[in-house]
Length: 400
Image (cartoon, rainbow, N blue to C red; front, side, top):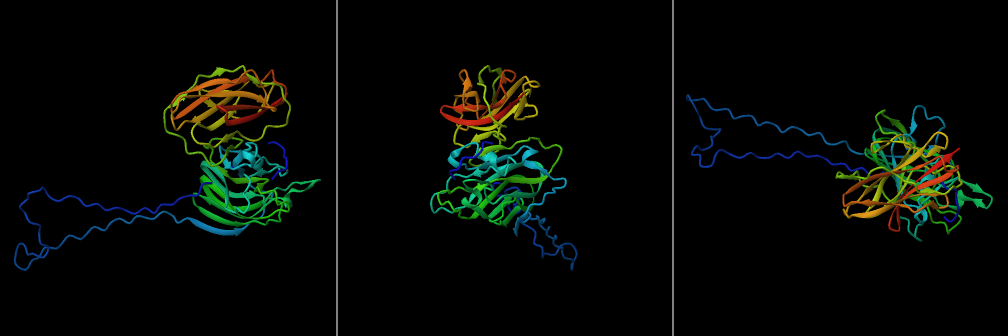
């Protein structure tokens, strides 16, 4: 859709049926002159016969559980969630989806708690009604109980009703490590709609299957004002108040390779004073081939190479500095260089970006920091780029 909005995405499970393979052991040493015994031949005294050995039955292998497939109609989400927590704002998660004009700020609109903003997908080509997906990666140690989602963009403005003007979702499928749920939404319902679904951590896929057209035929984007994943998490699960957003699909699992970590270097290059509201939720990473960012976090302190209590809001009076931590995947193992810049809301920075050498290893870890005290309250970004491409951006707010 082409409406300006305020600034602010689960891969299907696969199940294998395991069958036991029974191998045959070799015989006696080659050249043995002893023929094999005939089970029917008599031995010892007349009339006595050898009893053949009973064959040992092969152990039964229990099959993997059959994926659970259910179908239901979503209902308006209740206000009371009991002891459940909003997993996207409690534990370390990743959300991936396409975005309108590949704008990195689109994804956080889907889970910022504001029904007056919305995620817009990449524009659908005319006549293209193939399913589109939103992916959510959840850590081990969580249990999902329900998903709440809106059928569209719920905002009404003086120029028109964005809910009826845009496409609205009517049918979707939730795939998760234990099964899948086919869901019918009410495309006339503006409120959050509840999808009861039980599942563990892993990669979840919300596949948008069918939608109804909006009154504005020029707007061909799928839109969701809000997505909430309700559940419970073990105390050992890594915490985070913000999802990591990826424009595209979920990145591959962590690369098991050598790590080249740069030394922490004080970076004096900071964004100019800027104004603006709260930073949108979570870092946004560009999904691309070759060199790419797989993680970005902001924190006021580091424990070795680990950010301590990542967050996006910092106080001029209580915080001295902000660390920008990032990880890169370098599958082609090509030595290159990236830059890191601290920018204000207008994309301006004080001084040139910092150049950081990336060796030819499969994974690279680095961080830089900047001062908080000299900045005026406003919204800023830590931006990592490779040549002319933005690899990742993490926004933060400075308060008085």
